[in-house]
Length: 216
Image 1: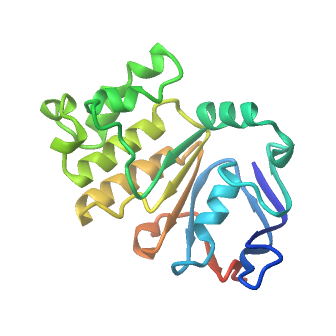
Image 2: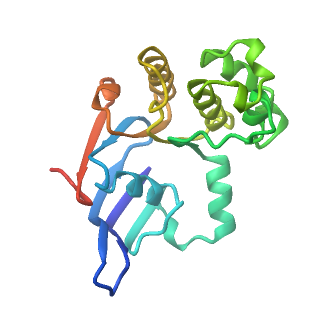
């Protein structure tokens, strides 16, 4: 599904502060499965995910998705790709503060059929119906993160990019979330960036990255 060829991400080019977030990365990823990306802070793991998801454009190299060169597509095509085929879960939930839980999930839906699934996703992720009508300020941090996870799944994306998806959850809820992501990965690709290797115990593959380079 994904292929990275000699990808580098360089910040502050041509200055004394020039930094490589990624260094000549070559990587192939399958169409499905749970894949973990792990490394210390500043190792480049989030940059790797952002480049794959088109949220950032690499300085050098090429990234192919289903054989198509992503670095050459226009902004509108990238936006459609992210909306229809990619789902995103970030460490911060980024919920709309004036919307309730159901509305926050539905806001990401591409059509009415997808929007109708919002309550089912929230139930599966452990929210009760009395919490459906609550706004983010009335939900716990863990509940807000589960709403964000439901929003990421609402369009049945082919790829989910998850950046520290369990960081705000207790052990039990983290386990439940990873179980759901694992099930989702049976016929789709789920990429999980994390500091916590223990949540990747069911991953088909773990990619370790240090100082912008993949460990071999």
